[in-house]
Image (cartoon, rainbow, N blue to C red):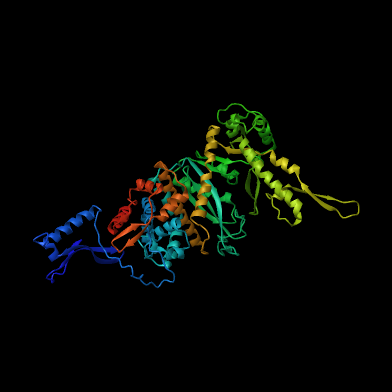
Amino acid sequence: MKLNYDKKSKDPTYFIQMGIRNGKKTTTKNVKRIGKHSELLAITTDPLAYAKEQVALFNQQYKEGKTDLSFKIDFSEKLSFSDDTASKSTLLNIGYFILQHIYHDLRIRDFLSDIQAGSKATFDCDTINRFLTFARILEPDSKLGTFDKLDTYYERPSFGYQHILRFMDLLQAHFDDYLEHLFLNSCRVVKRNTSVCYFDCTNYYFESEREDEEYVDEVTGEILKGLRRYGPSKQHQPSPLVQMGLFMDGNGIPISMCITPGSDNEQTCAVPLEKKIAKMFHGRPFIYCADAGLGSYDIRTFNSMKGRAFIVTQSVKKLSEKLQQAVFSDCDYRRLSNHDPVTIQEMKAFDRFKEDNLPLYQDVVYKILIADKAVDTGLYEEKTYKNGKTKMVKAKGLLKQRIIVTFSRKMMEYQRHIRNGQIERAQKILDNYNVEDVKKGPHDVTRFIKRTSVGKDGEKASDHYAIDRAVIEKEEQYDGYYAVATNLEDRAEDILAINSRRYKIEDCFRVLKTNFDARPIHHRNRRRIIAHFMICYTALLIYRLLENKLDEYGTHFTTDEILETLKNMNVTNTQDLFYTASYQSSKVCTSLNGIFELGLDKKYYRPKELNKKIKKISG
């Protein structure tokens, strides 16, 4: 700040003048009136010296963050004109400062600088990647939608939409290196728990009626499969799909991912991705944990080598007859809580509404079976014939593994409650509809409806429908039972505890699809589809690291609470003099400021102060 007055005037008015930089715009403004020369003579013999002393005092107070500003407000002043069709908010988000802190710690800028140096790109790859990632967390939209809202961030980045597309092509070309870089540098942010690696797959559908065609190379004969392909959809969408395989560590933080065509068998992507992870781990052993659909014979065999191990869900229905007899044999079961012997009959018979039986109702019982023959667990392997064709056949090899079978009365009651509701709906179909007109499926309620054809000799048979009690009884015998297969010799409770944390990877997919709007995917080009998921993956990693830091700080909040806080951390420009927070303090806000020490819990911010925070984060 400096002194401003008209030196030619005989009775000048002294003002404190401030230089203001707002983005690329630089202006000066009189922020405080000291007084006229004639007025100051009443209190001092040297008004000019007095005015200079007031400027020095103001500068000192400004440094301390306490200033007395005076400015005029004209309530008749009109809004400045804009060529925009619709009016935009002037709020600027500073919540992304928190995300940028983690982004910087991941050293993504260094990685992107290296690949940009080896290309002809003239645009700033790091700036594009940063704000595409932040937008995916704070306000997910299409790339064009994100481009149109760049001026809602405090830094107001500037780059062309065409640069976004070119950057995505460049990013995809370094897929494996980028994911490895993220993992290795994430170890600098938090301590990674890679003793257990959880794996699962999901798919994303496209609003398209055509799948990508296959291309056969005329020289090598290599078949290049399109990325968007028809396959079994978990959302039951009759649309082309892409498939994402995701590995997660024991704390719920992503390790790596792969993107494959929607028509591929999800089991075939696990081992190739595992090999890449084993390389990143430099040979450190880990436990592979997944559900039954990703526990094939090949996967279990691969995870029985080089110190690796597996824990996978095992379908009781797919066990051999001999093993099923052992499961339903009411002996050798023990309570998981204290290992006391107990029978399944006792678990099914006690009064669950009696308060004394609550510990037993909440408990789980278990027994351990040896299942060294792969065929006994219903496993299949791919066999290749001389003509080049492949077929899935029963795996007859030996595989060291144990089956931990559990039974839960609480789960049994839940499963029967669900089935009873399905049986009621099946009965309503019989009472009110033509059964032949009802859509049927292997897991639909119509599986409980039995058709019987009755007719006399020479006459056309007539169909009769009724509830099939045999199907109900067959399903009921599996109620409450659950099993996992493993080659570990650890205690049953430790194995089951590891397996119970698989829900976190489902939560990763939920965040991607629900909070980050990973679909719809506004791309057709293969490279840009993959780059889109790389950006989504980066956003997920940063968010999970943030969540982990909050947990380490001793606080835990829901995804919605964290994201809502970051989205609402906006400031508004007050006459280019300072920024006023338009958000309130909260438990989440307090915790974030306690962790990152960015001081984003104030009511007012000077422009220089926010600029310094950006520089501090970026190093």
